[in-house]
Length: 612
Image (cartoon, rainbow, N blue to C red; front, side, top):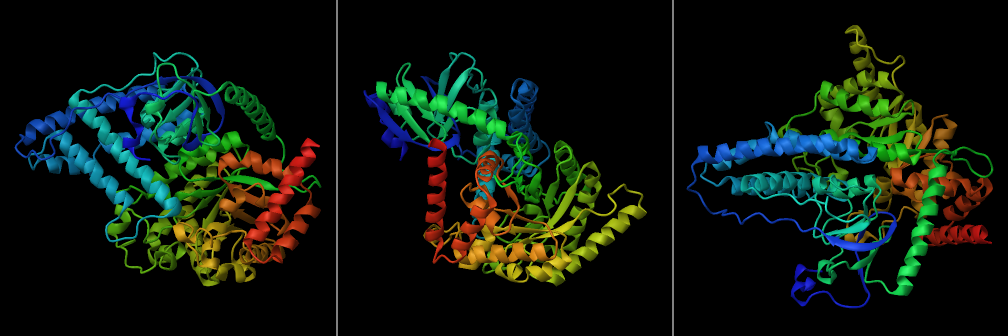
């Protein structure tokens, strides 16, 4: 819905109004709206080219100093936030701090100042140019799927630091939430990550905004704070008057303005039910993931950026089953050296306090964007179809220096706790043997240098992401020490359907029997070769699908941290016989819709038993 549809001049309507937004942080809240408007900086003359470059450079440096001081004060305030919020905003503040230092952003702004631009215009144009490169790399396909989410997040980082600099250049203040009444529902057009860091979760009942999305830093921080939140509820502000009462459902994304007596009563029931569910899921954190028939299942968490670490700790996950190391290479002007990488890996491993951490070496390809890699001729868009081109282990074997540096950093950090190393996009045993030779050579080199590394080296495993790897899993399992089935790519390649393509959503179905048969094949190969087999991807986060996957032979799963408690609840409610019966029926099904209907019916029967 467009901004024009808000019709602010007509004022708020009367009666109950329901809006749908993006659910960001689960929970239900009832309270009165408190609108926090953001002061708007004065307009910027982007066409002006007659400014004194030295004067504008001085203004810029002063704004950078003020911005750095503000970031330091925000960092000092972190002690007042919940632990989850401390880590998320702390990581983000570090990103901003690096941008304010010697960086590509600084050089680009100063180059524009040399052309006679006013400092505000130079900042806005340079940050927008860099954000655009993140979202649409020149000469390369636009990022898709998880890469698109990461690209939007990086673009938002550039735009946010640009807004901060412009505010300090123009003397425009930031908004404050200190005067909002206790128990209020914070309403805003948009909420920046630095704004969210100022929220006191003990005083604010919920957050609703007109703009924003569920994958940005603001959303991650709100989830970390544990506040019910809905973003992108378009048309919200036009409906809000003084002390308007709201019901906010952060689980469904529904916002009810001026709820009726009946709606408010139902919402109070939902508030109590959600509180009970949180207590129940919280108790699950300390209980084992064990089938009702006694078999143990391992539930681990995926980690995309370090800021997600507190959510993993809260979830009760038994380690990190997939640490995506791409975040080290994104938005990087130079490749991270072994010291930089070790400094990231070591605290993550230490934070898991003895639970294993599986680090996947960088899964890069020409559809992703990194200035450092582009300058090496990597990811230059030369592949006609990046998904079928040089990516993952294929790329690393062509540019072995990147792989050697990453192996060195991982081995140095691996003294902090149990680590496993995983290779992406493997399709042949020869690739595994070639990488293992490099791995062993790096280990010998470090020992000769007197560096303390584990003995024996951490296990080296592979991802099963292509039909070729699944079909050859028995051979690959002789070369690898563990297998991890990546169902996202496996589904895409098996069904020739890109999950990011809008017209392929019907065809992209991880429950398709063809995909399930490949999963069964890989699990059986691991069992025969006595190799651990895990499964990551969206299927691992689905409480209905996991019992089926157990029946196919998988006993270890890695998922988004928020999914762990609900998957554990599903595991504890089912026995092995039922899991195997589901698997047998699914393998004989005609299509994924039939499998999905079967799983839904079984889940309904469990719910009826619980209420019976």
